[in-house]
Length: 175
Image 1 (cartoon, rainbow, N blue to C red):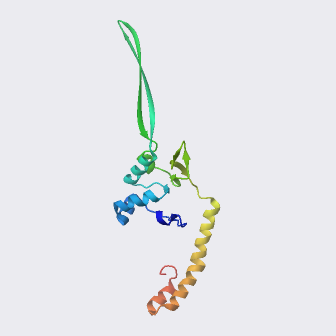
Image 2: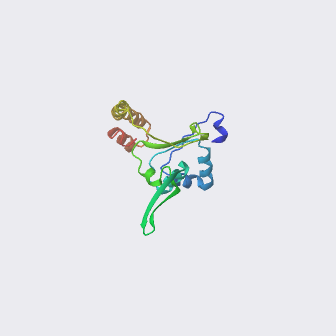
């Protein structure tokens, strides 16, 4: 990926979760692939390992907790104030596994803030109604026009009469 980026190569790798990539490419190559993928989108993985990885990549934020204690006793009243700092994930693995449909986290070197690049951006995409309608129309066109015609053409090239007849009888179920 890195060697061909300067030549204009764009690679789109999709997987359900990180273990799917690791099974296919091995642990070392998975690390290399993710390191070279400068733009990454993570939707709800419904997988704890992947969600933990994304959570860690998002980073942490500091929470300041102030506690005031009042004491009443024989010697009088006293008041003490203590302050604690602790870190929590910007986005927990649980939050990531509970993202809604269309919600995703984007990492890209093209987005930066405060001198830091590849900051996580939590976004939600809703497919416009117009596109959904076009998708429905395309499905109908495929099922009623394109697929039957392609099956009919394919049937002409089958030497096996049984396959040819099946294609003609049930277009789109068998091609």
